[in-house]
Image 1 (spheres, rainbow, N blue to C red):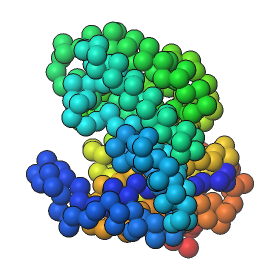
Image 2 (cartoon, rainbow, N blue to C red):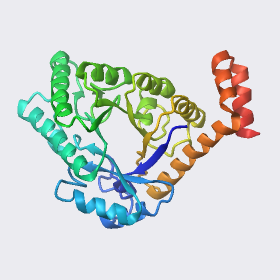
Image 3 (tube, rainbow, N blue to C red):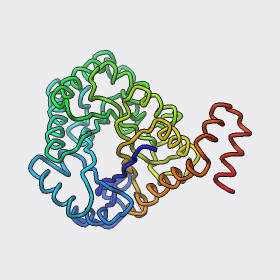
Image 4 (cartoon, one colour):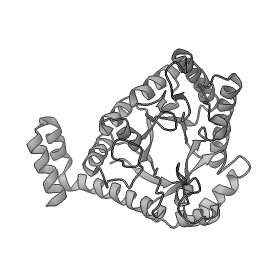
Length: 324
């Protein structure tokens, strides 16, 4: 297995709102308290942040110093393209000024990444999509995204930019909805520093085979980062990794191991009512436990069942590995 590094965003430990209670269901805690709780989670190495917001160019150096004193490292940045200013879209907005502002937002995060020593940022086009038929010129929207992303990729050539896709939410239909959309965009942008941030919860919600999606990106050398969450397939439920799909998560890790992929694994979950600290810790524990299962079963055995593709043989190996 390549070196997997684990990270989480402190904000996900606090109260998280939904459509029924925008203020969330848990007690309010200040940013400093959330930071300290996250710093004490002993099975993660890093923290990631949303920018600009949680961290800015003015606060970046101070944040790095806080991380060093906590024993954690700055892992990655996710560009805020989902809050109120972007409600009508970002890179694919009909308004040209909004598209320009979206590119400047990514450039600002590139500047923050440079200050913090972060190697990767993630761009998720959350509001670029449609809710109704005839709402968009799909051809123009695609061209605007490609053009804008070429501009920001050239601005930060030394920073990796991971495209994160999602099938729905907040838009009913997002332009960047599947691994195919993301890989096509990466190809059309045509820059070495642009790849994919693969959120396995988003892949599940899109009805994808997560392992196949990971292989699609790894074959091209374009899997830059991973986000981890589990769900029941109809929505991005963001529950603890492995509590719904342990075998499918195991297959993902087998393929990450086979390609010797290494990089940041961000715990991207929304524990609305339960402990955020527990969600992060347990998710990482599940992933590490499933990695150990690869050693227990043996890579040659796993390679063989993949090669043969016999359901009964696959079932026997997995059952005995999991149940004894």
